Each structure stands twice: as structure tokens, then as C-alpha cells.
Length: 351
Ligand code: MRU
Image 1 (cartoon, rainbow, N blue to C red):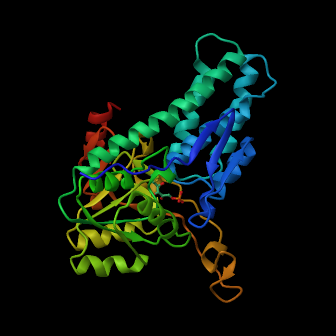
Image 2: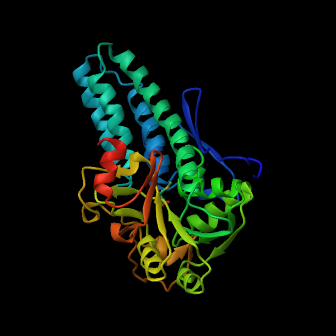
Image 3: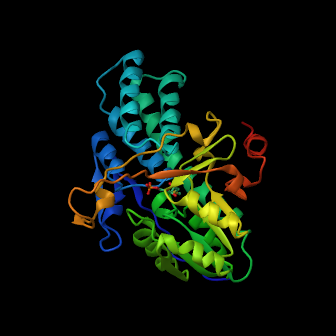
């Protein structure tokens, strides 16, 4: 058993303001920025200063409070209308991760249905609920780590994609929480970290987190994954999720689907780790998930340095869909869910 290491908390609610670690500056600079308005929160989400599905949900919740706390409306109906506007605005920042709308809906329920209380009291209840969402995510991620950690055996070589650690959540992470948990038990021989083009969440962020946690890891280019699998150097793949539909289809960072096909071809278990808040029981299958398209410049240049001839066109989907058939199991805070996902989600979550 290894000693516990420092965990990452990138989101803080301090003295009525939101403070986040600006992930665009990592790994070279650890810069915390204050966000005072809903507009600033929207920008921070859009520009990936804060990113990762659960983290977007948490920050969105605080952003919602920032947008309603000074609302001038005094009657409940006008206040609900104002709140809905704030909710819709924040929801427009990034479409794929369902955690954002999940959080905002939770807060809109408080605004709409909280028994009694004037507008001032409801504002206070919204803040309390945002703090709950944040705190619950930390507990959830801890449980995901414990559940997923049980899948590791001695000397496991695990491959992961994008960043799913404390940076992407309230603390601990999802897929990365499973890995760090298994590491505590001495079960991790090596983590293969996909660099995760185009924005390098793996190279910049996952390596930074694993280094802090003292977990052995090697960075690889995304296209090396198949070669390593074929050579027998990967025992399992664990990734996070941005939205999982009723049937288990999973939207996650672009390149995840490719990994799932490679894992299947090489008989390697492929796990998705995610909280209940990432499961969208309103959607039947992955074909219904909106995939965020980001700017061409993220592909044609890096850090404003062009990496292709001027005028090159690019196509930049931020996520892809892994079909449920390619997923061995989904690790949640309530336990490990195996196919049939729809039936087993209902059983485990009672939805
Ligand atoms: O574009 P990003 O960096 O927000 O994409 C993040 C991912 O795809 C993560 O794998 C996912 O949100 C899970 S984070 C626990």
C-alpha cells in the first residue's frame, strides 16, 4: 500500500466568488483566475480554461448563481424567467457534456419548486445547491475510483485518453481516480497516456496529474496505441465520458472510438468511468448526441504557431461516439455496470 498523495482541486468557491485553475496555462504555469460574472464563466468553459464533463457541471452551477444573485426581479414568476435566461445562456457554451445541463436543471428545480420563500431565500438555496453539486462530485469520484480500482491486478499496464483527473472534476477524477486508486494498492506498472490531439489534454494535463500523484507513466502519440496493443503491452483501457445514453453508447474525447475498436480487435477490456450525472436517460442512443465542432485553428496551428500551410482547411469534432458493444463495463459511483446497460442502469440507479 502506497502513501496517499496530493489530490488536485481546481475549482473553489471563496468569499462569494469563483476561483478556477486556468487549464490552458498548464503544465507550465499554475494560474488561478477569479470569475465574477456568468459571462466570464461562459468564456472560461468555451475556452477550456475549465474542462472535463463534471468540472463543467460544477462551474456552470456557480456561474448560474453568479447570474441570479443580483437579479432585480422581486416576484417569483419574473425571477424564474430571469433564471431560465441565465440557464439557457450557460447551456450554450458547450453542447456535448450532459453534466452542464444536469447541474443547471437541478438549480432550475430549486428556483421553480422550492417550497415557500421569497426571491432572496431562493437565491440562497441556489447557492447551497451549487455547493452540494460540487461536494457530491468529490464524493462520487472517490467512489468511482474505489470501484474501478478493483478491476486492476498486479502489474497492470493501462492506457487512457484525454484528461479525467481532479482537473476535470471536483477532485480525484473518474478514469484517473480508478488509476490512482489502483496505484495506491501497488497494482499499476505503467499508464500509457495518449497525448490527445489537438489540444493535448493527455500530454499537458494527465501527465501533470500523474506526476504529482507519483504514478509511473509514459506519454505516447495517439496513433501509437494500436501498435502497443498488438505488442501485448496494454492490459486495459479506461476512459471518461461526456455523455452516455440509455443503451450505453458513450460520447468522449475524439479518438476514443478508435481506441475502442483497437481494444476489441486485440481482446483488451475497454472501460468507461463516469458518474450518474453523465448518463442521459433521455437519449436512446449515441446517434442523438450533439457533437461539438471546434475551430479549425486548433488543428492547423498549435499555440498560434501554424503547423500547416496557410489556407489549409480543417475539420475539428471535439468528441466521438463509442458504441456500447465496444464497452466491457461502465464504472460508476454505485458500482460497475455490465451490459445490458439500459436494464442495469435502471436497476442500479432506480431510473
Ligand atoms: O474537451 P474536453 O477536454 O472537455 O474533453 C474532456 C473529455 O473528453 C473527458 O474524457 C470527459 O469529459 C470526462 S472528464 C472526467
